[in-house]
Amino acid sequence: MLPNVKQARYIFVTGGVASALGKGVTIASIGALLEARGFKVTILKMDPYLNIDPGTMSPFQHGEVYVTEDGAETDLDLGYYERFTDSKLTRANSVSTGQIYHTVITRERRGEYLGRTVQVIPHITNEIKNRIQLLQRQDPHLDFILVEIGGTVGDIESVPFLEAIRQFKLDHGPENTMFIHLTLVPTITLGGEIKTKPTQHSVKELLKQGIQPDILICRSAHLIEEDVKEKISLFCNVPRGRVISAPDISGTIYEIPLIYHQENLDNEIVRYFNLTVESPLFVDVINPVLSKWQHVVNVMKAPKSTIKIAVVGKYMSLGDSYRSLFEALSHGGLAHETKVDLIQIDSEDLKPENAVELLADADGVLVPGGFGERGIEGKLRAIRHARESKLPFFGICLGMQCMVIEFARNVLNWENANSTEFDAETKYPVISMMEEQIGISDKGGTMRLGAYICSLKPGSHLESAYRAQEITERHRHRFEFTNKYREKLEKAGLVVSGVSPDGLLVEAVELPVKEHPWFVGTQYHPEFKSKPLKPHPLFADFVGAALKRHSGKK
Ligand code: GLN
Image 1 (tube, protein in one colour):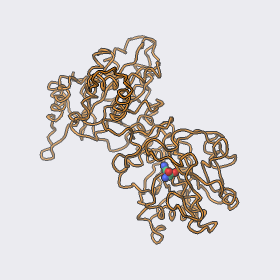
Image 2 (cartoon, helix red, strand yellow):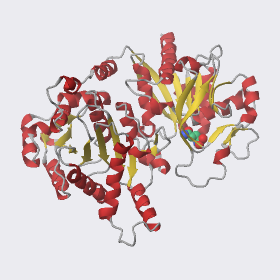
Image 3 (cartoon, helix red, strand yellow):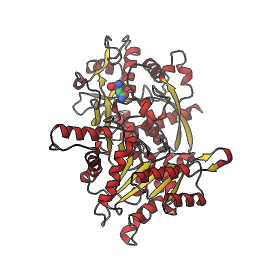
Image 4 (cartoon, protein in one colour):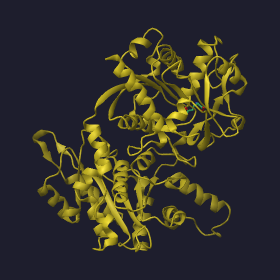
């Protein structure tokens, strides 16, 4: 922490004109740039929907559910925050309108408002401000608290959040508070003319809420020319240097911090907060260390080799349903300066007759987490093919459970072995509901969630990948390996390579190296902890095995 930073600085990012402009990646990139200057940063997401959290929302609607160390089920943007920065996020980093109202209404029922009328202003807005400040109370060493306001300016749902952050700047002063607005500057196809009017309208909409943006980040197809920036500056009342161009990128999202740096964004932020004092103490502040990001981008743009990994899942039509997983695979590739191309296969399209053909080009296969019976038989077929043809295979959560089912059915010949999630009557329930889950009827936030310690078996793939005997990984599941069958499965050759410290929960399985080059399944989700600057050891190891297979093919 910098010696003169007595209180955290707050940066609020709003979005305008259109949704899905990439606010999450933008704010995560700002976090990366500030960390590169030696600041301690955290990022908070405020979502305007009424759900308490996205845990019960469909991946088709909302993309993946990202799980934090402390077991909060959060928006996938938190995944970007953790991948781009070193900040340790907890449930306090994810706030929804539903949570805010829940807190206020619970307080009202307890009579804590002493008979007063409970209102959006000040009660809801105070609770929003309280959640923003909670982060600094939790970690007084923070230099910056970045807050993403979900939704688009002009939405009815966002209004209490905008009102709360307007008040926040008043309470904490402009010297500690900054508003950044992310907008779209479209190009009209006919004539290729660039249009600033939507941005002007969006800023007017913000002004109606009492918010004047300090910095504008303008998404557009190409870099925005000086004259257009000048126009935006004039009409939106934002100094010319603080109109930042954010062109579409053709390569990797990890280039975005570098593009923003070229556009001078981080310089403008530290200048705004007056953190550019010419003193030796501020060396890092003035010269951000971006070489690691540059390396990531260089490798991604010119990889030494390319491999193909087939991912067999249920929500394939939407890339965001497996966002952390796809990112983790590309990080695994980075560890070998290799590009990982994905073959996305909908598990329902995979049939016994076409499995070999669909997986023919793959150097490795991965079956990710999921819920419900749909597509299970296709996944089992893919696993069988990977096991028999010695194709590197990685099963995660449901994928690991399917490995156990496939092994029971096809190696032990336990007919119709299954998980009780899919067949309550099966003769061989090799996967069954966890003891602690029986009798729980509420769906939200009730699974086995968050980080747990796992002990690794000496000599296993897992131990050699992690180079550790004890690790911590995040979970999100209700079902587990049934211990009753453990001995028989182990005797038949399935290695239990990870267990809970008390030995009672099977957390990982694999086949021994002499049987299969890489056949590993984890009950936990390693993808949540992988970062481009720190690829997850299991993904790096899996890609390494696939690369070996690929080189062997040539
Ligand atoms: N449906 C399985 C369970 O609840 C797997 C969950 C998952 O893959 N995240 O245990």
